[in-house]
Image (cartoon, rainbow, N blue to C red):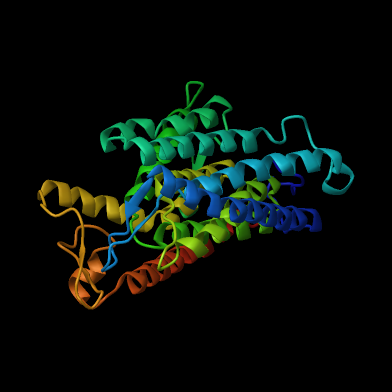
Length: 353
């Protein structure tokens, strides 16, 4: 999976080739996504694949399938990087025949998630069905036995999940983690820039750790996804020209957890999905209390009027008042960044010699 290790199997510091890969993947993914966004906006509007931007006073109708642009950028970038690496191995380093196996497994997982999301954007899949469909992106990782057989719990030590020859990490932890990321990321959505911004922050922090560890596979995977979403974020930021849709949220959620799994960085999920877990808990209360309203409204001043505090993105508007969509998103992204950086810093000793 990686190119050089110390005596303990821990990868140390980044090298010029991996920086080259990161830049190349970022730029390639960004260019492809930038090229596709205008075409997707026009095609979506013509085909009626649109939605109401509900948190605007005038409730404009805009294109909904922006995530497809980033997904296609991700797919082609990874294939291009693999092609280039094969012919420039004198610079990037000679690799074993199965070097790209985790990368291709991750690619297939994200493609499955993105296609489910696109079908949802077009045909509106029931949320109960998506709960089951969320296990499908885990299959490539399980089939190729990607990841490890233990979970490092920091000062509590490592827990080996092999039981009588069965790798429970692969059979149980991976499908549950992928399903949660798949669905929870889709639930924590609905505001301009929230999903793309949230995902971009997580991907960037994973990239920093991958560079520090000189992990080529995670670097290729993350930058191929990040480049497209940074470009998409520009069009998705308030006021959005296009929403990323379920194709975007399901791709992002799955992509983040897959990157953590293939890089053995799964402990970082505690920070990267903290708000999503909080949102899941609050939404459970929402369902139990049988709240009638499903959407927030916008008052004459453009502020969000939240019907209840039972989602992570309604808490601030409900209690503080006078909060518009852009401010709400900025606060949520700031909280996400602080939590994620904190967990990353606390986890660094586990990756040090």
